[in-house]
Length: 135
Image 1 (cartoon, rainbow, N blue to C red):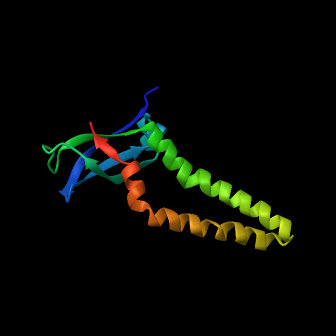
Image 2 (image 1 turned 135 degrees about the vertical axis):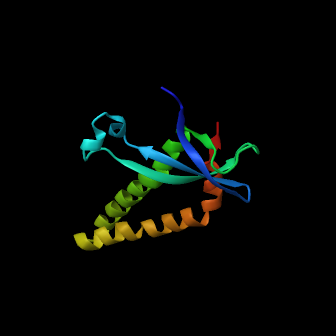
Image 3 (image 1 turned 90 degrees about the horizontal axis):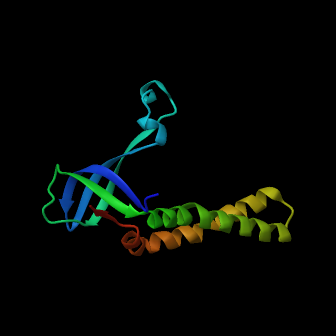
């Protein structure tokens, strides 16, 4: 199994040391021969920012953007794992103080606000860690 995440894309724009690449993200069934007749196949266009790229790249070029699978796992952990643990911990603590279930649910959701504020405040630092490169 490869330890890199690769996507082919087209350079949309290069400005201020940042290259914007449009990639087509597909689900596993989108490559199937009958995907056009099936409602389960999924295809999305996304634009990713690449900061480490060769100077020879220009708008309209086809490039392959690469990230390590560790970057992907860390992104999933920060986006889903940590918020889930925060909610479960807050729900457990709230259940020790009250038996009002709607209040416990509200407390567990409100406890996510500081986490997402921290992510927002450190977005530039996080952006450096979750970077794509051009292969």
